[in-house]
Image (tube, rainbow, N blue to C red; front, side, top):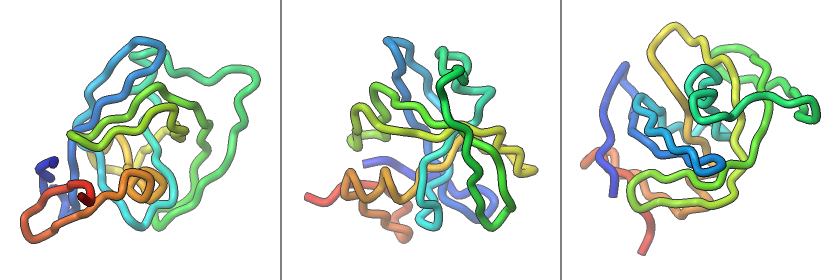
Length: 128
């Protein structure tokens, strides 16, 4: 179970990423059921060695805030409390949305872990 923080009228949490034995904790990550994919801020994930390489494909994603370019990487682990996925593909982009945000947890992650979002209690958990 993870306690969600209410910022800008939206549910945020902290997450852990592991990539090639390097670990980072990211705060200010949005839980977004309206996003199909999980995306993280390029400046932050570079701290653990996630960078664009020659063979990476650059794609355009679009959302309510507009469009942006992203590239995709498999990470060793993404962890939100007791919700863990190994060898999970994330998107990396600039994420310049005009407010403090380091990532978006999208439906790809939420569905894969069987997440349950309780907005009354402001918690994220998994189905039992």
